[in-house]
Image 1 (cartoon, rainbow, N blue to C red):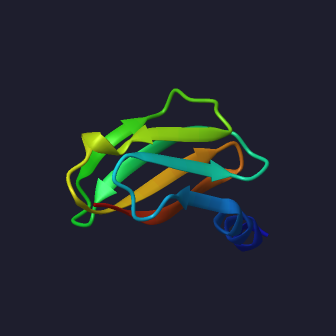
Image 2: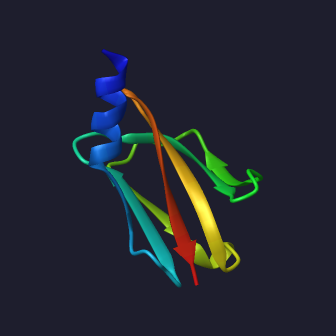
Image 3: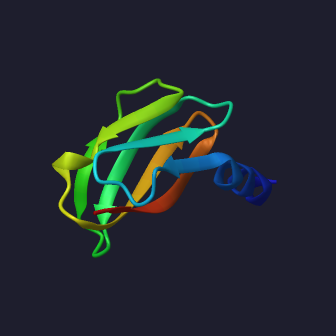
Length: 87
């Protein structure tokens, strides 16, 4: 039942604070994040890292220009994504 797993990941995934003008945090409750990809709204990859094993991902929002982004995180159970805004 893959759809149920994807929905579960999405429900437990949070990115905060939104909007942000500094640090951005991401977490999937109960799971470690093993990688991430940040894309802009046009789909261009801005940042990525696939060598992680962390419960809470901390990103430096100062590396990003003001705008809307999508972060996709990988866990041992699959991937999920969410948008966030840098002011």
